Length: 259
Image 1 (cartoon, rainbow, N blue to C red):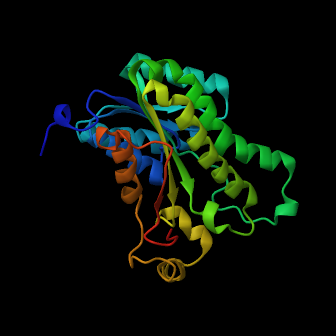
Image 2: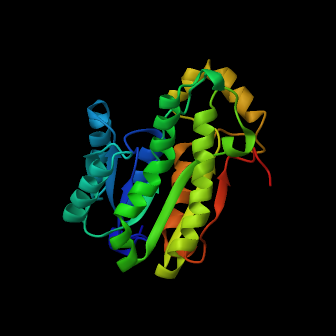
């Protein structure tokens, strides 16, 4: 096994939003295992213990990480997080916009309030803009990579979750346009359309056996997707092996949506 100094992301620093649990935690741990120093972002005090647990796992494996509380839809909070990251870990050239609101929401679209719509769009779409702008000085000086974690619901739709699906579609347009904007700086911007990934939170959808059967009936691959499956693709897009890939949306769903 190679040392962290020889790892593909050695010498780089990353911010992973919504990294206290599930897919975000797996991404943070994979980037750290591949050599990056990682900010494990979490939104509030309710998720602090989970975020600090992720940091401890990274540290125990020989990596570097800090937990930083910040609402990524709040410009001041993001600016403070970026300042903390730069002071503790160095210039940040990797950004993974993973945080998301209302993933499992189930409400008729005409019962959603404008306030609910605005909250989800700000958390899931506007936050990526706020973070990219806050990191622009680092990105301009060092190049780097932004990965936006979207959803295959952009392709499939889902009744009862219009605000979430719309926000994830916005991330795809944001990815393509920002890739054009930042290409001259050597900054790459890509997105993932993620399918049904097995996490403890999916029990909100019903009995585990029923969820598994329903998902496997839609996928080409007959196993459940795991957070590590997403994390590996994120690490690839952050690294030099993906150095000529930008503005793209990669589908990570076990063959649910086949282009």
